[in-house]
Amino acid sequence: MSSTYVYGITSVGHPSLPDGMEGIGEPARKVRLVGVGALVAIVSDAPDDLRPKRRDLLAHQNVLAESGGGGAVLPMRFGSVAPDDEAVTTVLAERADHYHERLRALEDKVEYNVKAQHDEAAVLHRVMAENAEIRALTEASRRAGGGSHEERLRLGEMVVAAVQAREAQDAVTLQHLLEPSADAVSTGPDSTGWLANISFLVDRKAAEHFLAAVETARRDLAHLELRVNGPLPPYSFVEPGPSAPVGTE
Image 1: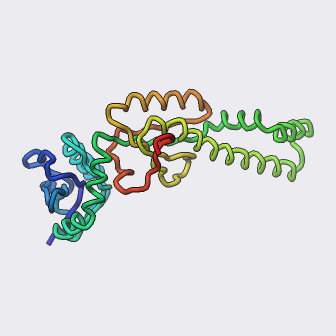
Image 2 (image 1 turned 30 degrees about the vertical axis):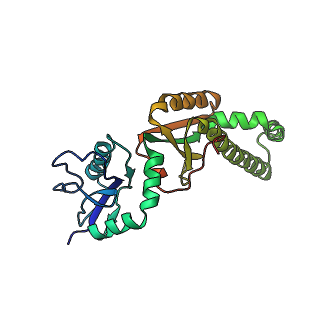
Image 3 (image 1 turned 180 degrees about the horizontal axis):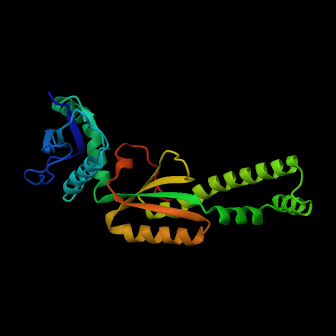
């Protein structure tokens, strides 16, 4: 018996998917609904050799896009597989209260992910401007023709520490600038090269307001390079735990 691939969870009153809709796999598996009570899961059979291939990633996203057009859907991340349909309905029954609460909370909401990194030249200039000791040591090293190995090592360690402190401060500042324009915030896992990786839950009708806030942050924090991805299904908000924006608690 094939295992069951889960795309998302929605309410039983959600409009049905287009007839014959296909999902992941090659050949593509037919998408269907399995449910219990007032909840349904959007599923298909799972391929035995499931891998994050481009075709399957796009098929997963397409199923969520189609199913999310008529109401809230709790999106599952790519690769969510259950042993069979019965296992899916068992989880739906056991966590019914949670899924109903999340569906209400995510109605008409989308996710925007914002990542930030420093413009290296700009942040070094900023660190120099803010730290008198680093400026003095740099000038002394210049006058001494580069200084001793120990002096260069000390200066390098001070610059690295100052940049790391600035990274932590800028991550907090960026979140504080953007979270008033969002309904909830979820800090993602640290990823190499990014000083901030933050997801924001945004009302679909307020997306332009949020994006305007991003542009303001881009202007005010000119030493940062920002990357914005969205609108996305609210992957980061399926489970409880995201913080509320300032002033909403």
